[in-house]
Length: 395
Image: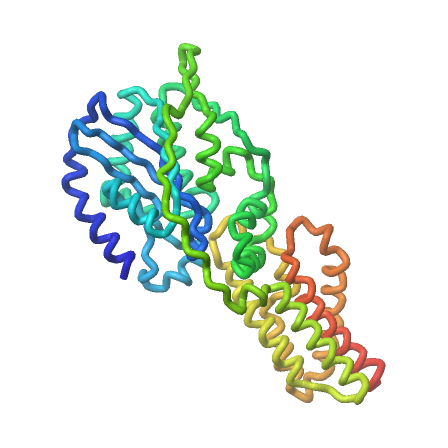
């Protein structure tokens, strides 16, 4: 409901905005960077927007490329498939600031050191982007988002080139997003599971500006190199719009039951049941059915992400070795008497594959979350036990 109201209010600005006159000498253009907000998944990365302020013309607008609507039909499916569309919205500056101040996110405003011609060029580009046929764009988390779009507009608007003189070292894409989600272990777990080896590529320092804080830091020391050889700083003035201290989040059981803790609890349970089977010379069919059913369902999701999603950073993904849809077929084999031989071969192949994965886990070109090890080990243990039980114990 909140998103719908925001979209409605923003739509009211459409007609007067498109009819605005040219900017005056008093006009200024600023880059706004909002601090991360830990209470929502989509706000832990911070946010970027552009402000155009012209007191002489009564203009004080925020251009925000980060609007989306959760109520869009099949939003979760479309997001997973990579078919997500974001929208450029416009808000009045005071309304925008109040929204972030209320949730406790400070805003860093960097007024850009642009000539009037450059400001006009940027202003006109924003108006073109805000036309109904242009304002919706296909979102890409790493390469086309609320931070990359303002950066591109600024670079195209200046006379000359921008030398960012990046104040930070290069990191991988995964290191960058995992730092943002460091206070949300389940979110980190999900990202590590869904994002494949391309995420472990070293991002260039310019690509790192997909995160608002890196764009802010890059802009802070950047200079504009004019065609005539003269230079000037990109930022004219910086101010921080403070916000109230956010409330401390309430602690829940999931602050203690992290993915790693839950995974090791599962492994301990699986190991205890397997030892019990060995001692009592029994077999708990329900254990294999439950474990491989869950792994198979996860495998269906993984298969969808790897082979049907258009996200650029998902495939190849080494997690498909241990989390795949074939586990669902294995459940059927476990339950059918005529499938015992096929189940043995399945366990053998699965055990061999997971053994290689566990042995090479620190050598494969992809970071695997620490919780993956006990999860992989749980499936590995049951397949190993299955091979032993069917071959050496039962003959």
